[in-house]
Every structure is written in C-alpha cells, then in structure tokens.
Image (tube, rainbow, N blue to C red; front, side, top):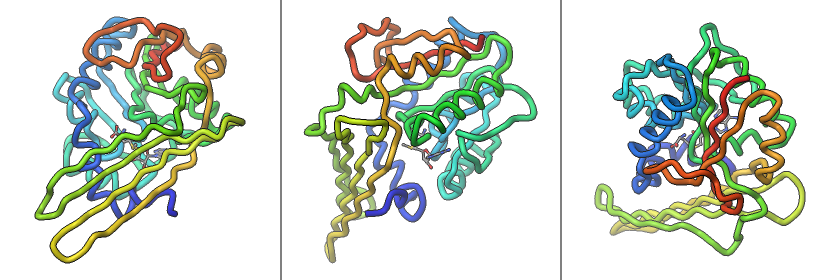
Length: 247
Ligand SMILES: C[S@@+](CC[C@H](N)C(=O)[O-])C[C@H]1O[C@@H](n2cnc3c(N)ncnc32)[C@H](O)[C@@H]1O
C-alpha cells in the first residue's frame, strides 16, 4: 500500500473523491469566524491546500490568498483553479513567510499530516510566526479517543464513462500518537476494474492534548463541526473546528 498516491499519481481523481464536500460552506464559516475573532486584514494562507477549493471560495469573499502544499501535482491543479493565487511547495511543519497573514486555514483534517507531536508543535510554531497581530488559525481535527475503527464513508459517481467508488476511514490502534487515514478508489468501465488503496500515517491526539499544545501561542476556541452555524463544542464530539487567535 502506498501512503501518497492520491496526492501524486492519482491527484486527477482528488476532486471527484471530494465531490460531496461543501467547500463553499466551510470557507464561509472560516470567513465568519475570522470576522468575529480576528483582525480586519484580508491576507489568507491555506496550509495543505490540495487542489485549492477553499482558496477559490475565500478569494470570492475578498481575501488575497496563498496556498502551501507538499505535493506539486496538487499545487498544479490548484493553480489551474485559482490562477490569481500564489502557491508554494512546502511543508506546513517548517515554513516561513515574508509578509504575515491574517487568516491561516488547514482543512479536511490535514493538520494530522504533521505526523507526530514533535512536527505538530513545529507546525503550530510556524503558523504562530506567520500570523499578523490578531490573526486567526482555523482548522478542523479529530479526537483519537472518539475514532470508531468500524466506521467508513463511501460514495460513488459516474465520470467520463467510468463508475468511481471512493472510501475513507480512520484507524486508531488505541495507544500512542499515530493514527492512519485509509483511502480507497475503485474505477470500473466497460473494460476493467482498477483499485487503489492508500494508507496515510498521521498524528493522533485527543482535544485536551491539542489544546495544551496550542495554548502557549493562541487563545483557543473550539466549536462543533458545523459549518452552517457556530456552536460551542459540547466537550464530547470527536470532530471539532479550532479557532486560534494569536497571542
Ligand atoms: C486531505 S487533502 C486536503 C486538501 C484540501 N485542504 C481540501 O480540503 O481539500 C491533504 C493535503 O495535505 C497535503 N499535505 C500532506 N502533508 C503535508 C505537509 N506536511 N505539508 C503540507 N501539505 C501536506 C497533501 O499533499 C494534500 O494535498
């Protein structure tokens, strides 16, 4: 099993895999949270930006957007989608910026790609340095103690005469700071069925641990994983939106 094919050789299928994600709502929610908790600036950086869907919507909301991702094939697609944005190949756990940003986002649980606590701390420090006064870091995350290894999300669609089925699920072994994201793609047309499976190593944490890492750098607000309304986290849900205001 590879751990990266979806973001390299199979990057052309990424947007199909995410076809049922409401990126407009997520981006609108990040914009509202920035308006409520952050400053009035409009410089935005999306970490692990992928093919740039949040950048597309946040540009429409008036932000001057940049994106950073570790896989060039994803950035190539992002540039096609958002030719006015600036994109950089880089690692979110070790980046610097010339001019600070007012809003930094990292969605679809991508902060977990930092891999372990050591690199997650570097990511948090890099974000803190890259933000302007009153700037906001907004991302979503999953709590390892709430991962149900039996759950998976699946969806299918037709594209260019092929039937695609996509699957994704979290796996946490119950111990330590590693979890995996399992992704699968099946493509069937008149001639054949092709199958691919990726297993992505990621950092595992619970929300208390995450808050402890963030709190030296940020005032941290945690919300339910709702993009259409702002609801304070109920201390129980395993998915949440973190809004971190630079100290
Ligand atoms: C699940 S995709 C999310 C893409 C986009 N944020 C979205 O919501 O569709 C994860 C992205 O993280 C990128 N990535 C993984 N590790 C990274 C790292 N250490 N630094 C920057 N980007 C990374 C991958 O290349 C991929 O584009």
